[in-house]
Length: 78
Image (cartoon, rainbow, N blue to C red; front, top):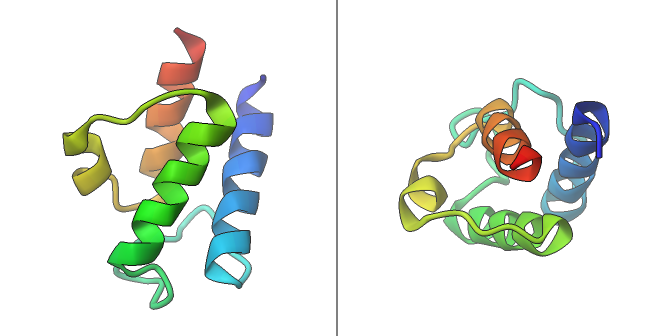
C-alpha cells in the first residue's frame, strides 16, 4: 500500500467515525468531535484495517492526524 493510499484510508476512517470531513491538519485539540472515546475507536479501526498494533504509549500520545499517518506508514513499511 502506498503512502497516498495509507493517508486516504486513514482520512476515511476518521471521517466515518467522527461523522465529519477531516483534513491533514486535524488534531485532538482542533477537532471537537475527536474525544477520548472516538480516539480509541479510530485507533482500533486503524489497527484492524492495517493489521498492525500501536503500543500503549502510541495510543496515548498520537494526537494529530499527520502523526498517526507518519507512525502508521513506518509500521506498515516494516
